[in-house]
Length: 323
Image (cartoon, rainbow, N blue to C red; front, side, top):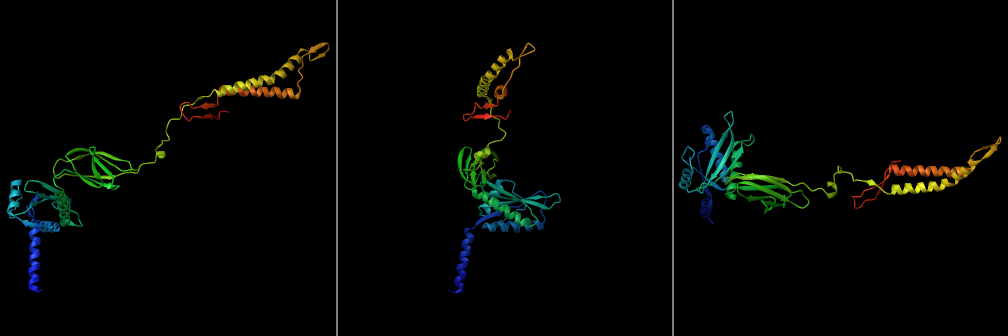
């Protein structure tokens, strides 16, 4: 193949690619203060680069003033045989320097898709226009909205908007303007449940960031501040006290009877009867045990150390440290 044939083929391919590329009319920029020649040159070069990055051929207009209405925009699009128009809006800082850029893509029907960006020191005007143009073309690709964009973790979490299933995270959902209840849920995580407000203009995009937190295990959710269980005196207290008293009476009968018998006339001194009770060691020990049993029974009856929990189905008997 000769070089002339190759050149013809390359020219034809380039012409075909140019013919297929979308065309956009670049309108005069809007600014609160007149733009200088240097600013116009910088803005023109930056928007030209941003459009070509999206495979859009920029077409300049001869108009030096921004279009006042959609009829003017539609006429510029028609005259340039373009698919849409591009309009820049310039924001200025207090010192007069350009601080922000807004790029708007306008269809002949009046649909407008806009995105703004701040001027950063590292990238300048060119980077801001590239960022804003990318966002505007993303909006135009989605079509008329408004849109609700949900992103975050964990990926694949289920989304419902106003009670209707809307896919999985991350997701862009077409909605109407106004209030919408958004619920994002996933097994093992606490659900996200919020009401968000979406603007009513067609190119509105409401971004919502979601970060679900893992649910705590059931044991970890028990609070330590719960009220203590109600307890009551157990009848066992009085049964034990009665049994101790009965045993004490039985033990005391022998020594007491001996004391009564000895007390009638223990011995005769000087012709007089002296009531002396003569206990042996066994009787003394028996009487002491009876006294201790009786005192213990009385203590159990008064202090009632044995408690029960009647409201608890698994209640047991609790012995309080009351002695």
